[in-house]
Image (spheres, rainbow, N blue to C red):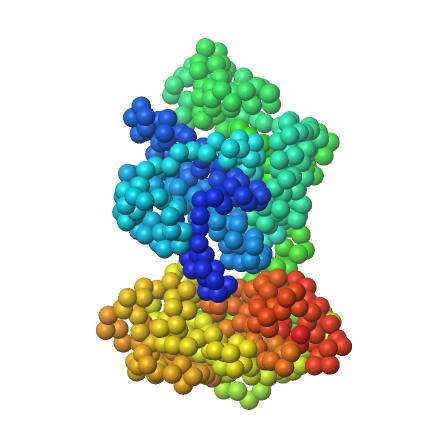
Length: 607
């Protein structure tokens, strides 16, 4: 729960305005996931009051644990892009208000159970709480506050019910993927959700985008007809458990179990047990499996994997599509490159180029590398070029890897041979240039927080050129803290292992690499670079030159197109969404699709 507080810091830094919460906004969002987590929280409040009134502590604790799971593993996971501002400022505000309202509510509820962590969270939340919200009493500690009363109008059992169905579908899908050893990163064609109640299936379709994203499937199909897919339940005995208990009746019971029909097995699963020849047998004592029957049984069995709980039955199409196989090969290439980098003791910020040569001709691997070149370069943070284009750069390491029986020669050389592939779908932006705005690289000499593994980033000192956005030593520390989440108390800046004076003009740091330490008497690592770590796009318009940093920290993922246009609008103080061109004459419109933003790295576009 504590790490969720970083979203409020991010909003203030990215949007340049203070986030301030007041309780009157609670429940105003129309987003279904916002309404769900608020409804669940208010239902929990109602339960806490009723159970604690009769001292049933044992009934409260499991629900508090369930709340933490719902908030962290469901709400925040499903709404991370909204909370980061990728879907626009207003939508981000609604998500932040929702997150704050449930955190603020629950720290007061959980304070008697977990006094220290709730106090820490409360002190952080209190920083952005609108003055007067809690009245005139002592608000210096969460333990001075009363547990809030539930707001009945915010409780929506219907929304809680169909999000619960969504959770069942997602968890069943994850189980099947684990069972057949297909990671979530590999796309699958279809998931079929089967239930007799059309209303529940309608609820599933309302939330199908969440299912598609979480399970990485292209299509969500619903059906009330289990027979259409030929899915039946079968059971057999667990001899290890029942053998000694049944003794002489083992064979007769085994025969009855083998003849159980689909409905009988389903009824047993619902009730938890079944009586056979006078013996009460628990459902867990039988091995229950799904199988396919009918004329298409063999075809369906080869295509689908089935699984169910007491809510729904799902069929996951695990047929290895060509797209899945292609992406798998591309990931194999990434894996080999990363292994070679590790073998050469390279760190993510080292400027190197990978050259490749496929010894066999006319192989699928050649097509895959060409098709997924953008993905490979993005994942490895390294230009990846054919060996035929290799320059005279000094070789660091080379090796030959085998991928699906094909020999792939990889050579890593010092320096970037050129920027990563600049192609876009329509028009060509102005060629490769240096970054327009003054910048400084940041290296964290320590462990990053906020869910990132990267320790490198790039900060712009001016944006647009001539308009300072960072003015002081302390501001650099605060910006770096917003990215990496390190403690500020003992943090310091260093250049070439020498401490930077806090009064040093930030302009003197332009183009340099600054190392941040936060441990007392820490000796910083020695590192430097002549180019920004993070990828960027130069922007020109209205007589100004600016820049958009596409990722921060480095390797944390390229921003969305919507976020990109929003930043451009902010840089040039535009009143509407900007139109972007590839040429200075503004005749060729820039069209981007998919992940094409990465292809603009190091180039200049115009607005």
